Amino acid sequence: MRFSLAFLASLLLLPLTASAEDWPGWLGTQRDGVWRESGLVEKFPAGGPKVLWRHSLGGGYAGPAVADGKVYVTDRVLDAGQKDPNNPFMRTKSTGKERVICRDAQTGKLLWTHSYPSTYTVSYPCGPRATPVVAGGKVYTLGAMGNLLCLDARTGKEMWAKDFVADYDAQVPVWGFSASPLLDGNNLICLVAGDAVVVAFDKDTGKEKWRSLKLNAADIGYCPPMIYSFGGKRHLIIWHPEAVCGLDPATGKELWSYSWRIKASLTIPTPRQVGNRLFLTGFYDGCRMLEITGTDKFTVKELWRSKGRGEMPNQTDKLHSIMSTPVIKGEHIYGVCSYGQLRCLRLDDGQRVWSELTASGAGKEPLRWANAFIVAQGERFFLFNEKGDLIIAKLTPKGYEEIDRAHLLDPTGQLGGGFGNPRKVVWSHPAFANKCVFARNDKEIVCVSLANGTP
Image (cartoon, rainbow, N blue to C red):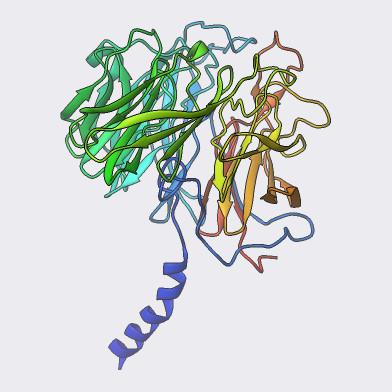
C-alpha cells in the first residue's frame, strides 16, 4: 500500500513538474527568445508582483541561466583598493575576481561559488557579459577577458578551462568577450579571435574539435553564434565585423559568406531567421535582410537594407539596434532602435510601420542607447528595460499596447558621458523560468513570481 501511495503521489506531481520551463542559456530553451510557459499573470497584482527572494551580487552584464532547480549567474568583485573609472569608456587596468554563483532557484539559498582572479583592461569594466550555458550536469561560463570554464553544475568544481588570450593569442575586444557560447551536441562553440574567429571545443574535455575563419579586424565583435537551417542543412551563423558567414556546425567548413564591414565592431544583436531569410541589425550600420538559397552550394542575396544616413533619430529609416535582439512575428519585425525607439517594420521591405519611446525608458524624447530586451510569450511580450521595469505588452502592426508594468530593480550601471544624458542603466537580459523572472543589476539578483494567482 505504501508503494502504491508513493507512486500515486509521484503521478500527481508530474503535471506540476512538466509545466515548468528552464532558461538554460542565451535567449532560453531554444535560443530564440520565446517563453513557452503558461499559467502566468495577465496583469500584475496590486502593489506589483511578489518578490520571492533577492540577494546581493557584484557587477556584470551577464544574464542569469536557470536549469534543474538552480540559477547560475556570473559577476565581478574588485580587489581591495581598486576602483573602476568614473567614465566607463576608459580602458584602465583593474584587478579583481570573476565569480560563478549558483543558488537554489526556489529559495535563493547559496549553493556554491567558484571564483578566479581576472585583471580587466576593457571598456565598461563592470563584469562578465556572456550568459552561462547549463546542460548535462555542467555549466559553461565565459568571462570578459576570455576565461572559458566548464564546472560541475552541482558542486562548482572546475572540470576544464581555457584562456583565449594565452591559448589562442586572442586580442581582447574593446568591450570584452561577450558572445554567449553555443552548445551543439558534443561541441561548445565560441567566438575566440586570435588564431581563429570561432572554435569548437569538446564539451566534456575542452579538447579543440575544429577552428574556422580568419579576421583582419582587431575585434571579433559580440554576436552570439546561432544555428539555423537553410535548404535542409544546418548552418552555424557567425556575424563578425567583416562578414556574416554560414558554417557547417560539425566541421567549421564555410558554406557561404556575405561581406559587411561594421563600424566599431558593433555586431551585437542576435540574427533572426524567418524561412530562408536572415535579418541582422546594428547601431551604426542599420539593418539588412538576406536570402539564403541552395541545398548543396548556397547563394546569399541581399533583399533590402537600411538607407539611413547615420544612427541619429532623424537619420535612421528602419532599425538600428545597439544590443536588443529583435523579434519577428507574422509579417513584421519588432525591435529597439538607436535612441530607444521601439519600432515595427514590414518584413518584406523593411518599411517602418510605427515607432514609440516609452517601452525602453527613453521617455518623451529619444535617448542614445536606451534599451529594452524583448521576449515573446504566447500572443504578448515581456519587455525588460534599462530602468529596471518589466512590461507586459502586445506588439501588432496596429501599434504598441502596454498592458502593465512593474519596477523590479534600480538601474545601477553607469552610462559613459560625452553623448549627453549620462544616466544609470540595467543592461542585463533577464531569465524567464519556473513562472518567474530572474533579473540582476550590479548590486543584487532578484526572483519575482509571474505565476497566475500569486498574491
